[in-house]
Length: 149
Image (tube, rainbow, N blue to C red; front, top):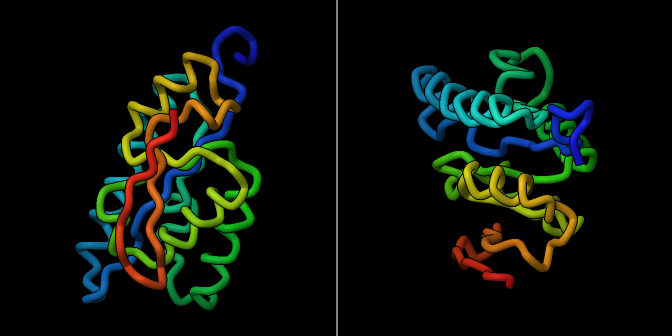
């Protein structure tokens, strides 16, 4: 469904690493830029997008990290789709976000272009047609690709 003939009536959440294990500011900036790129591409396709990397950029230390992480899980509850940023496999926070989305039967895409294709085919709420859903177990740290047809 489109809003006003232009904007899609769906909200995408961009999920990916923010911090880096080494704590280097340079890597944090690169993670923000990677998420920002995907968010901008989605907006260019008239798809409203939440990019938590930009929402709380450089807020580190202003509140406990749990504040941002738990808040992001609440925001996911109000979004329709997750799109992943490179490096998600190494982010415990992103893995928690993926589990939250999948628990709520929301599609998760490792590629923003696949999400755009699904949205424009207007099969957004037909999760049985989601071509690729990525699930990673935070306990076992093993990746598996779930294919749904």
